[in-house]
Length: 197
Image (cartoon, rainbow, N blue to C red; front, side):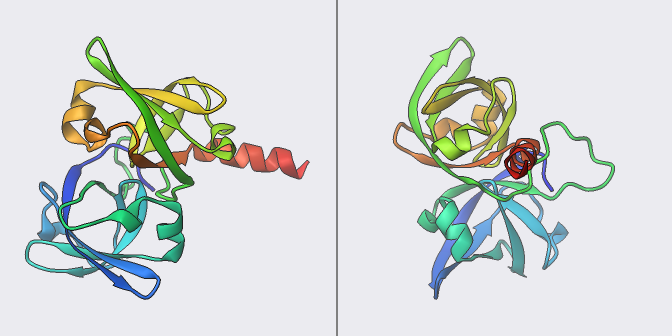
């Protein structure tokens, strides 16, 4: 379980295909390698992956076929930047929202515009995802907990404060770029219960 409050932006130092999976080595900028343990979960651009190896200046994770099919991680290359967050510990403050690290699908940046001190992103998403997105609700975009400003039939918009732009990869997303999306877990459960009725 995560909060969507990004701790670090790491750099991919290796991305090797292994059958239908991708082995990714990540060098964090601020997270101390010495604090990591093999087997722990780290959210990478919104996708929860398990640490499999730890080296002096990087750690390794494996993204399986399902993860590659649902996320942008299949496009990871040496030098790619990833938003990183370690799993929530019992007793931590929950400043964002409940993020599982189980990406629902991807969205595409349709527009970006300045609105005073905020950067607003309009993101196109599949209708199946948009039906779970509500105005003033929460959504994780590339692992970042954000509040939905507005929803249309094809897009939703979010506003990024300067801190988010400076400390995540979202400020670098240009129109046409894809991003991982995780809708609110509560919305998913309610929708499933309604379908079952």
